Length: 99
Image 1 (cartoon, rainbow, N blue to C red):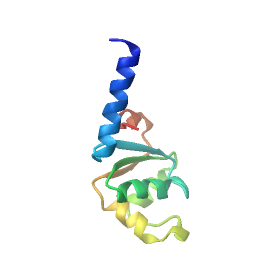
Image 2 (cartoon, one colour):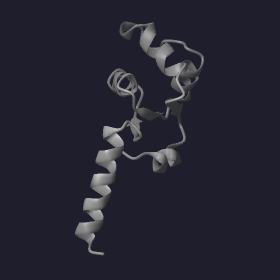
Image 3 (tube, one colour):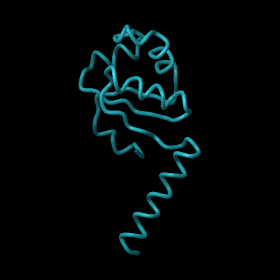
């Protein structure tokens, strides 16, 4: 199979996963820009893995503690309670992401 056909197949597979909300999206950084991005993906029905080097952010999300007060508590609560979101410092999990 040619590289073009393989790339086209991969693109179509990803497009299908996005359309039917089965894609897992990796979000790098869980600060004031990417945490709301992860939340928007979650609210749209997508699954996401949030990555950050700061273990305190991961622990805060797990314990429903809002470390970005200006964004409100709902975001942290929604993500913490969900089976479609996980926060981690383990960047080797990037391979689990489709996008």
